Image (cartoon, rainbow, N blue to C red):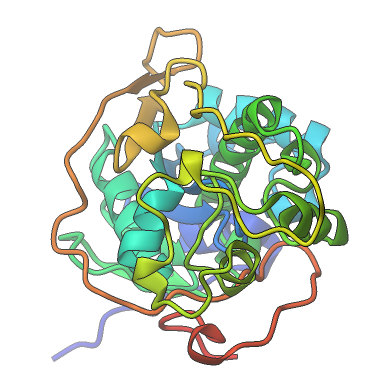
Length: 318
């Protein structure tokens, strides 16, 4: 019995080498998936998927890991990806879901849904870091995939730009926290605002730093979010009156982030809408299991609060 021919990944192809190798083996539609906001303690978790066309059209000018690009460069690359992709999709998971189901569970479910929402069915899937099962097609989890595979890098840009835009919109409703600057990640300014004003409805109460600021750190992670976060006022060390937090507005065509369990946005090269995408409201994430939610740590250097049961995110080793 003859062994199958070897698949050679050509180093000179750079970011496109892995996809080109798969395409030479007959996998024409290679999808990439990635997320943004995993390490933030406020705002939604956003996952995206993309399939780039073969050949020169699929070579996106300036494409790289979204964390290595400036905001202006990310916006330019985002437009190029939307214009060139055979299919793309974005899934938005609100902080209420992250608190209720666990970060890792939501992360995998969001990537699975983003891939399932593609208008072109992928023949092979590359994901950043975590394997995603239940796709019905072969796949590979690639360490630092957004720096290794073009389709994963494209997904990372879609997710990052979408989430940054949402956080800028949230900043107009919750101006005390500086969401437009730090995008919900832990910085000295964000930590000081949390201490002074307490968390708002868009914070993730299952995260230890938010739980500590809310005075609910002695509760299990799933029980830390108050029934009505908009009316919640944390115990304060200052003699300031904290006004009730207003409800989150809708962002563009997307319904209020807190109003639905998740909001997929998808599109492709043939779309005719101005953004190249459409919005629908899906059902709850099916079969999500209980997990352990972790401390915020991610795309920006930041000190991590220490603490017990939540020191590691579910499924991660530090």
